[in-house]
Length: 455
Image 1 (cartoon, rainbow, N blue to C red):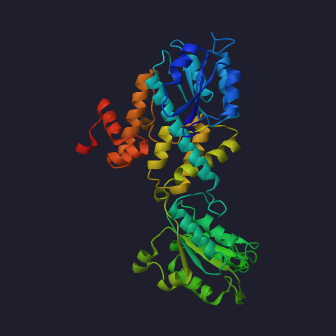
Image 2 (image 1 turned 90 degrees about the vertical axis):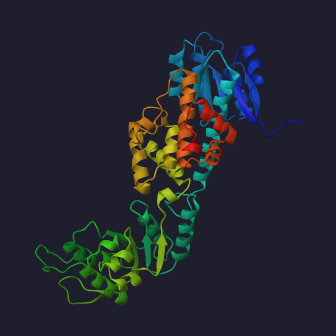
Image 3 (image 1 turned 135 degrees about the vertical axis):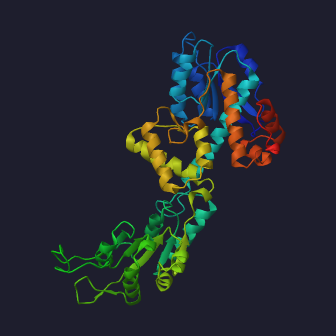
């Protein structure tokens, strides 16, 4: 009876001796064999495999790499997320590098040492599983709110609160650091309300000079001041029937706060230079990245206005507290910007993924979006690297073409980063790397790294 717990691994190799050698070399895998391009495609159609080892020298032209490279492209067309490890001769580095540029995950040079190749296959499979998990999360991570991507508990809790508050008429205060997407949440509140077909009008209080902010909000009559050549409605009046979003309300001048408070109490405005009261039916949503309690204590924000605008408070978590979300967001941005720029990528390199997970993200989602946009423009390979996103280039691996040296570089970099992320906790670092604690200690010793227990 077949063991369904075994992971399919396709080995494309025309040499019967090497086939026999490799068939029993991979513990935990169901090894499938193919001797040419046609049989490889047939095997993949019957038994989808996450990882493929591919000899570039295949019949009918085993002396050259043309058939192997054609097989590589056909496999990726059939299964774009498959991790392909190409196998080449010692004197065939150019074709190995060409295969990498076409989308291969890694390459290995003969003579084959099953133990080393097994390590490469294991890491390829781990990366495939992680990417597949993220693809599934992205597919179901819109959190039921348009434009908001995330699967972390903190962002889902904020989304559930928006779903409850949206249909109400409550004046809401959205709090969060710069770049967390406060306006997106304000738009979601509007979209869930009975006002959704009416205007959503946004005004950034910090972006307009103090002496112009009042006229922007309340409008003005012709001749109210120099340059007022015609009657002009303000943002409040323009939003009538809909929603007015006041971003960065913590930066509103004290003198204007009093007039804003009066409007919130009476729902009546007067344009600058005007004498007639104008009733306005509008829902108010405010946002700020500032600590309003500190501003109140310092006499910079009216306490009574605070209570008027904060009937419901919605706090948006910073990106660093949204576990797993940076990868989801980065993948979404990568797909969007790649399409807009007519480019195609297979995802993020391992070091790039480490940076996405461990970086502090002081600029939050806005910074992440900008870094991915930069990478799409500058990247030269099939994978987005850490340096493509503007991280310190010394953190990106400069791999040796010697497979042993390259493998040690990868292992050293991943171990060091895992220990940094988990504050030298060997148990947690080992779990994150998918290996046992003793195995991690053995690798630390083998690579001559500092013992974290003595750090």
